[in-house]
Length: 257
Image (cartoon, rainbow, N blue to C red; front, side, top):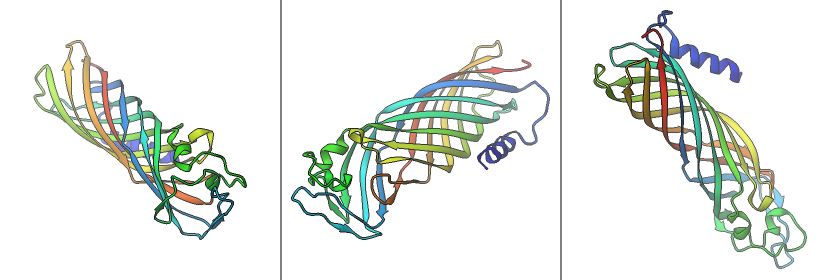
């Protein structure tokens, strides 16, 4: 299903274009991605906690709200695009982008609307004996990452088509296959993913080298709806926000110049 959707997106980007080589291009870029912080939220299934630190446990009802905040480090992004420049300011392309952002930290763990940062981590780990470390201390160690493979059909408009330096704007629609891994302090909480409709808006500038090569730099804001993943630590699902700010530099080769 994913391959069929990718093929449809790529076909959409190139529909109606001439088969002539003139005006076609390929490009590649490398950049820095800042994965925006996420306020994760979800609902539990029914379960009984581990030791709360005082020898007691708690029965948690199905549908209980829970969540926490996740901060991400900056990461790397790589992209490639094939498309056509019409020579009148407009350009279209099919783009693939790969990105990865490590988790920095998790904070503000809540269950049933209240903070549980101060509870012994055995409560969530399901351990019978106290672990001697709080929930807040356990999750603050931000191991894990969020990785994405996205395909976009893009439309661009360049200002000053006859100039060497050409600012441009663009927008794209596509899909993103997102994988999330949260393993704070080595404890596996999330290892799941989802494919979502994705969109992006861009702004950048192209410098024409006059030999069929162009250099460019651009900014892109990319996002999907929340990613819904399963919780491996206790029954429940979690929704994770997914927005990116991407800064890239690259080169574009135009055929038939």
